Amino acid sequence: MLPIQLLRQDKEQVVAGLKKKNFKDIDLVDKILEIDTARRHLQVENDKLAASLNAAAKSIGQHMAKGEKAEADTLKEMVGLHKEQARDIATKLADLEGEQQDMLVRLPNLPHHTVPAGKTPEENEVVRSQGAVPDLSAQKMPHWELAAKYGLIDFELGNKLTGSGFPVFMGQGARLQRALINYFLNYNIDAGYKEYCPPFMVNEASAYGTGQLPDKEGQMYHITEDQFFLIPTAEVPITNVYRDTIVQESDLPVKMTGYSPCFRREAGSYGKDVRGLNRVHQFDKVEVVQLGHPAKSYEMLEEMVSHVERLLQNLELPYRILRLCGGDMSFTSALTYDFEVYSGAQERWLEVSSVSNFEVFQSNRMKIRFKDGSGKTQLVHTLNGSSLALPRIIACLLENHQTPDGIRIPEALKPYFGKDMIS
Image 1 (spheres, rainbow, N blue to C red):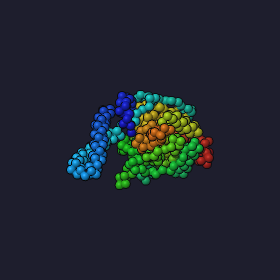
Image 2 (cartoon, one colour; image 1 turned 135 degrees about the vertical axis):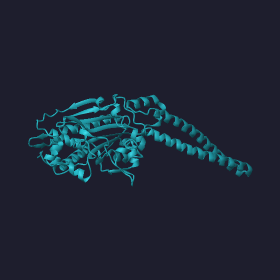
Image 3 (tube, rainbow, N blue to C red; image 1 turned 90 degrees about the vertical axis):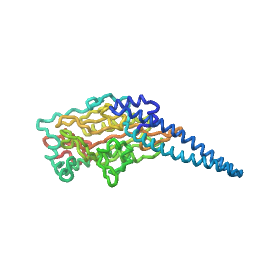
């Protein structure tokens, strides 16, 4: 959530940022500021009334001590009227604060100044790319055919057990999933991240804290009886570990990692984008999260990008890194780098990770703060990234490493998988 102080101090910057993010309801800024002005005026009136009541209470005591009952009674009548006024003002203040809050949470985060202008994925900026696109034979097979050939994934069984988009991994396919999860977690732990095994359902406060509510309410699976949400990413519970917490400045950055299944409705997806593992409703992912000092968060972001980049290099996959344009960024992000891996059999780029800096957008909702050297309390910056999401990684591993004898396992993954080949 954007701090209201930012809207007061630099409305023009806010409006320019919202336009860069292709946000349509720009008039919402003026509505918020109008309510804020009315609320602040009412707060001044409320403070004056409170001061008057305190002074009257003190004066009543003094009159009573002197035996001046008539004067004290007159003041008591006035206090009664003022208390009624105070109750009315408190009600109006609560209504205005609620209305302002409801509007503020509808504003997306502002983009960092380095975010390119644009509205569509085609306008994203390629930062760099590495790895040769595989030259597969004419007999190349997409991952769904390879999965069937080697008995790795049963998509139809998933349809039977649950529905479309819930694949069943089995045999060497399940083994590959487990190997990747363990490899990713150990890689993150070795880089200084503390491992968490979070709940896979969260309450409304947690979903609100990271910005899934109200923006992505329709994309999450909702357990209505308990008011829980199945998590779309481990980012949600892991970041909320520090909700309503003041962190010691000396403890920054806080680095966390965790594995979880992820659940997403993916409403509106269709066509080639949903074939096989390209887009599913349940998938496994390892996440990295950092809480950092505002002055250092963009250095941290670059470090996280390099961290994920080395993972893809170790998996021997061709990739490219994109800086997302304003119109293709998430509701909560200030700057996002997407990682795409080339799918050799499908001959297209598939997104496998996003690494983002949210600045204070999430921490303002969750009240995650630290005290600086002067004793002033500040909001931390929050960052996260996929490290990594499994479905498309597995798709590209199967496709890009296919040989006439089976699927070659990258060197870094062999100790976890226990074999050189899937055959």
